[in-house]
Length: 82
Image (tube, rainbow, N blue to C red):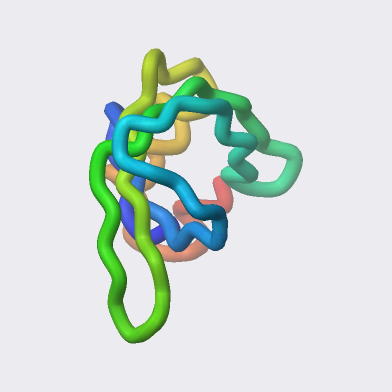
């Protein structure tokens, strides 16, 4: 995952996904922090042989919202771990 926001994320993807395709994403956000979210692929790009897909979330859950909030205020790895 290279970008996150309250409404979605961008990640390297090894699956052959098409823009508009919908599905579920199982995401590990930290130690013992996992979430499964309904997503749809909204953009796709290729850089240096890597494929990146932008996903929009149907509805962010509590775990996702807390992670994004922590990233918005965290400044060090210690901040992000706590």
